[in-house]
Image (cartoon, rainbow, N blue to C red; front, side):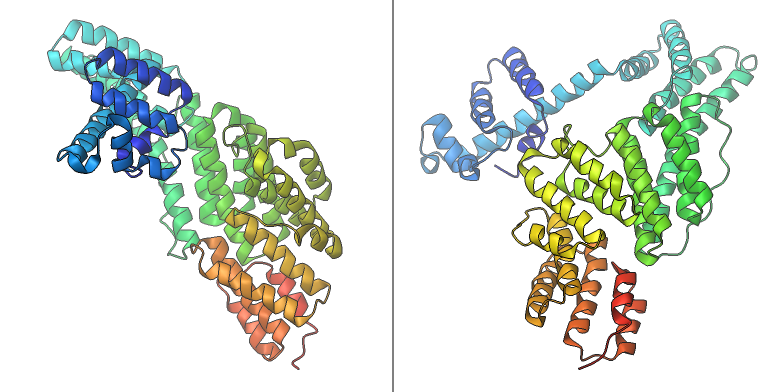
Length: 469
């Protein structure tokens, strides 16, 4: 049953939602004894739903109904139909819950009902009030555009019923608001497409047309942020980065956290991509500044905790931008928010990063050699540091080549993310430097021609005094 839709959705519920849904089932489906039995069996394994063998269809059926699965011709059908019903009821429960928690959504649904039923008087009063309410509310996410669009649509509908010539200006204003709502969404999608085309080396996207002038402050903030982000991705110009940074510092608290996370990560991905092509310190400084904004607003947290990979990334970027004091202070002051099970190793890895970047290579090795990581990004970061530390300390060829081989094997069997695609050529080029059979010219060509490459400047520096055997 691990792959059924109901279980996948059930995993996403909070403890409180799970309890409320249980009460909902008992209240609205009290006669569905089989469904209640199946549900009450499944929630014993919430939230991780382990071990998997106890969720196998046959095992669960026998535990719930105390009957041999193989002797009941309808056992499988009974279980699958029951789980399908539970999914349908959970879906209905979540829709109702979402509606109850979202007054604007309630109003939009109610107005749609009034419109369908032709209750013009009540529809007109409610549509007018809804429109006035949305016009005075700020946007925190593009999702806010939907109720504003619907409010403008419904208000426009009621005005066109009653003397449309008299209300022509207001109807036009409604239409402009609907266009403005779409513009918010269009700008966000344009940012997405521009970033995708940049990092995949497609042709540049067409410049966006100038949007209509936004009158609502909430709309203006998002419009300005998305425009600055899009201009940054299209041009890479420092002025557009400064504009985006200023907007995020001044108005970040007015943007919904999930949306702010998307904006910062989009800008960060672009800047990170630029740094792999050109290891200019300005790119690292921009990434560092984005990290600090994200840290202020908690956008990198997951359930109030920081993943170890994010913790290491903060420290790496701070060191690459030469802000060693901030990196040390961050390790000291923020290690308590790292996911507890990962915290000890995350702290040691972060300290190793600082040690390496301050050229204390032996200390970096002492910290790294005993460590074994679970998360792929932590493994990659630790092996990258380990390999360069060995090289800086002139470790023997066997140690270097064995480390290269294990690292290369890991990268080749890992998903081909941008990080992996930039790291693999680094390992292959370093291996050439260790073996010393390739010509200097060939190694320099490999460095220059690599589409993406980590530590390009470091490799070039190591090639300066390179000689074949």
